[in-house]
Length: 156
Image 1 (cartoon, helix red, strand yellow):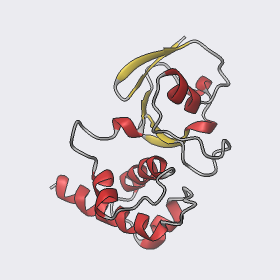
Image 2 (cartoon, rainbow, N blue to C red; image 1 turned 90 degrees about the vertical axis):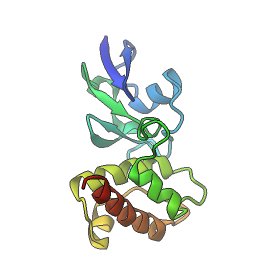
Image 3 (tube, rainbow, N blue to C red; image 1 turned 45 degrees about the vertical axis):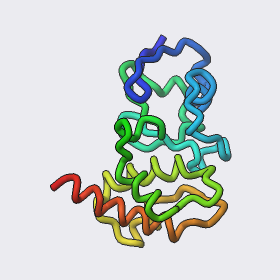
């Protein structure tokens, strides 16, 4: 049995070690914001944070989740009614078109901004590789720049 947190709530898992984290999140604890896209870790629709690092949950077997690990999904990103700066920027720039990939896009952008607090367009293009079938990449890039500004203001 492994005991870990998802969005601050304690959970235990005793099932199949090969089951992807994605299915635990969606089916066992009803965190439906994390989406299934490709199932092979290519598209990023399933991106969550494990111990603060973005991971594609469709490719993370439950065996990789350790005792005391912390998983954050899109549902755990905001603090109450206060949106995370990336979520706020997504709203400001009306980023989603169909919206299916956006939870993963946001989670990946949060991770990118932790590593590169003020990224250039090239750094965003090189480091944010989640796929969007609707092609909202221009708005995604603008929102990442805006989130960078919002985070800088928060950290003053």
